[in-house]
Each structure stands twice: as C-alpha cells, then as structure tokens.
Image (cartoon, rainbow, N blue to C red; front, side, top):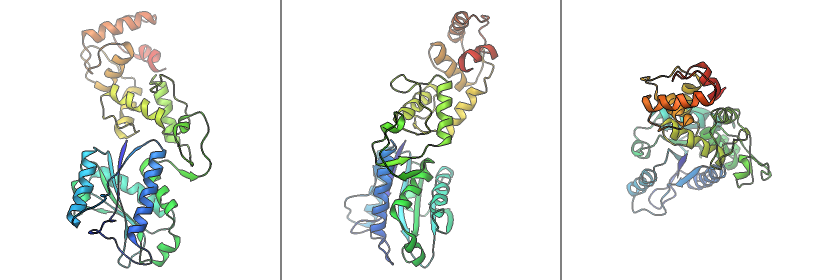
Length: 320
C-alpha cells in the first residue's frame, strides 16, 4: 500500500489560515508525523508537498502530479480550518475516498473534536484531479479556542493513521518480539488488530507464505511479512497487488473459503486460480483440460477419487 501524504499549504504562494495558531505549522507538524508513523508500519509514503512553486495553481498542480506519477493508492491532504467553526471534517469525491474520510474523521473526533462529517470535495483541485481515492482532512479550527486548547499533533497524527489503517499507535518502547512487528523500525508501539489476525489466519489456512517461505505469525501486525503474503495472494487471485487487506482481498478470501464446486467449464475465476496454484498448473482462471489433468494428479497423491472435480473432499485437503 502506497500513501501520498500532502502537507497542506506551506509554500510562498500557498499560505494557510491563521488564528490562535498557524495552519502551515500545524499541517507540517501533523503531516510529518503521519508520514513517519505510516513508514514505521511498513507502508510506502510519498510526500506530495512541493518544495517550491511559482503560484498557487502551480503548488496545487505539483501535489497532484507527484501523487499520480508515483501511482499512490490513497491520497491524503492534511489541512486545518478557520472561519468561526469548531471540529473536524473531511472532503472526498469517490465512494472509496468517502469511506476512508469517514474513518479518519471518526478517529479525530474521538479525541474531543466535533465531528462535522464528510463533505463533497468536487470543487477542490487536489481531490478532483488525483487518480487515487483522495481525501482532504480539515483536522480542526485554528481560530477555535476549544480546538486549539485540546490540539496535540501526536494524537491527531495517530488518529489519522488509525483511520487509514485500522491500527492503533501508542507511544512507547521499541518493539522487540520476533514477529512482523520486528520489521517495524520505530519507537512507536503498534497495538495488534483483530482484523489483521483474521487475515493472517486466513493466509495461513490457504498455505500462503511470506517472502521468506514461512507461515505468518498471527500477531495482528500488518508488517513486511504479512504484506508480502498479501501481495502473493493478490497475484494468485488476479486482483490488484495493494499489499493491504482491502475489500477486494477480503472478497477473494470469501470466494475461496466458500469451497465452491469446481470442474471443467466452471466460471469462477478466483477459486479456480487458487486451485491452479495449489495443484501446480498454469494460473489463468479457466478450468480446462490442463487443470483437470493437474487435479487428477493431486487427487491421486492424496488418495482421493480421481474425478477431476474439486468437491468437498478435495477442498478439505486444500484448506481444511
């Protein structure tokens, strides 16, 4: 998973709002912490904030250009609001962006900020022109005494990261356990996620190994090992290799774990691709004669009736 993080404004021709505090300073502080935390969790991050620009339009153009040229999976623009209100809100255009935005706003509001919801971002250049699902977060109001009194950049950044990844972050000691967390080089402790534990359990059940050929430790941490296993599974299933437990991946899990009846002529690409991978034949999602012959061999090796059909007994050998 690759995140494009846009630290709002912070440019000679693109200056943020002023109030009790300066938006440019707050956006930079929070944005850099978000980048650091995502990187520590093993995600790829791209800083989309330009170092210089000749105009406001150029500043906006460069942010979008950086995101699109780096093919980010999610674009997040970090801002602070002004104008007499209070609380946190976000902007999005796509349904995927809105779903991401809802999670982020929910986490920030849990810190004590008013939840102003997710709004239409079609008028915002960076949201409208970024290829990836994009969100613009207005973390809080710089001219609200309440918002600025409770503002803490560490907490805001952690809330944003939790909203994006569903992983809690707590300030603490360096992780030392021999798990995926070992791969996270940071002084931030990562709280295990039950959702990630379920993903790791499913990958192990499907015999999907990490890049070192090992089963995953079911520790609830989305680290390098789990991401490499997700990438392998996504390649087998023929879906986008996001290295994340996204909706497409979960749907692919479900399609296989349903143990559908598969035989020559069956059109059910994802389970067929998985079956082809397990029996060692060419993976194309089409159940033809080559797959049938491969299944015969698999069934013979496992003392099953050689009928060329992936039924309950074959699936039991494959995934239990």
